[in-house]
Image 1: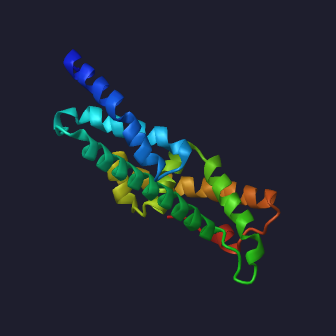
Image 2: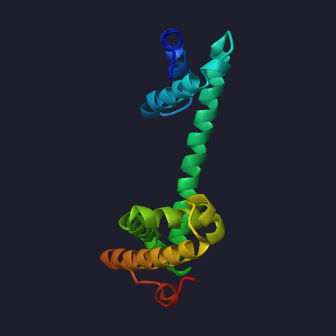
Image 3: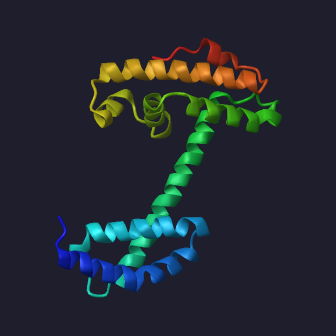
Length: 181
């Protein structure tokens, strides 16, 4: 629990340096992200208030820089996931005109599965973790993870088939014959 002196010191830090952090962020990210990232910077500052130097501005701006880098990496991972998932329903090489529609179908199918299924699939497809590592992350037995991952993959395939049908696209043959193990 924070002591009143900590709270007052932090309020003073925030009041004095919030605009500086926002100005720094404004030059480096989209306007609608500035306040969110600044909030994250000051949350980190609150948590690490005992480590703040006498002149906190360089520390705050360095933290803002790291928060922006984390945000950028997160966007890159999301884009990479969309690309990997789109490969599941990639059109034949001579049929590139409906690739955006397939990508939309893949993303809609991923959104259609349950949160638990999505978590398993993302750990497997996005993070590239094998079932044993997923089991460690989720603190579940590996056998259970394999079973759930297999079922989640089948549900994703089913949702993807539905989405491809909605988009009036052919379901790639490998999706109708692929079994997940």
